[in-house]
Image (cartoon, rainbow, N blue to C red; front, side, top):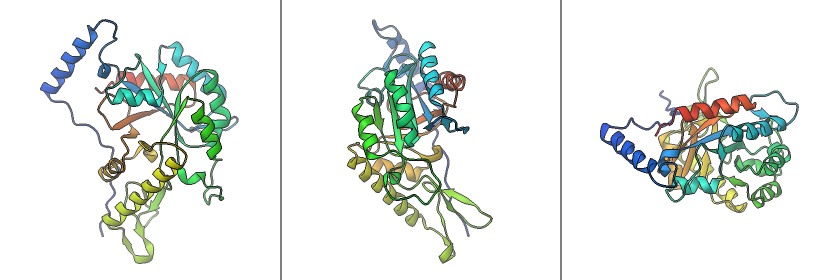
Amino acid sequence: MQQHDETRLKIPKPLGVVAFLSLFLLGMVGYGMTGQAGTLAGKGVAVITLHEVADGIKNPAVVAPADLEAMVVAARKAGYNFISLQEFHAYMEGKGQVPPRAVLLTFDDGYRGVYLKGHPVLVAHKCPAVMFPVTKWYSPYPRPEMSLPHLTAEDTLTMLNSGLWGFGGHTHDGHRFLPAGSQGRRVYFTTGQAWLAGEFRYETREEYLARVWADIQLMSLELRRLGIEPVDFAAPYGQMNEDLERLLLEAGYRYLYVEGYRLNYPGQHLIYRVDGGTTADQFLNALSIAFRNRGS
């Protein structure tokens, strides 16, 4: 019995010679323009991923408030410029500029520590950021899985009203694995066909698509309820396949965030992100790698 498990990232094909020369010539023209540091496409934006902010927790996904502050200060001292989600959208649509060494700071999952401990740091330093919450976790009912406290609707409103935060989605109930047969094999909720033990078979492709589509609709509904336009989606675990990509685009999402150590340029809908680590040194190293691998 064959299991379909597509969890690959969609990587752009290499540029042909004509396309490469075209981009090179456009970049040279933009470089010579008075008052501009190159063309819009020539700058690129690094997108950085963090998760929780809390004191006293040793975990690769948890940043101490003091370390978050050190990240922001060190990045600016090194010449990086944090931009807002609105500025990022305008740039990606070819409607606005970004400063050199532009950085979009993002947080996944929607942990409340980001609001309680991280938000004050970002406000103090006037540093914009983006949150990608798992929307099911807004429910007031106890969660069956082990978890850290999640943002409330009130927290989200406060963050939005600060003018520093943008929001997207991180699935409704899809930040998890599903069983995929014997020996404990699992697949990502969003990219794999699950094993239906009660029926002794795998999901059909149609069942998989219907399940993921329903989750996307619930996520969009919750985001709209919070006053958020659902156009940004961060793929859990950075995983994307062609089916998930197509469903999200059909649902109106325009920016799909995946893993990838490279910069982002106008016209893309797959947005590559770099893990920011937990210290200022790791944060700067991640930025350095992204800007070396420009990927234009």
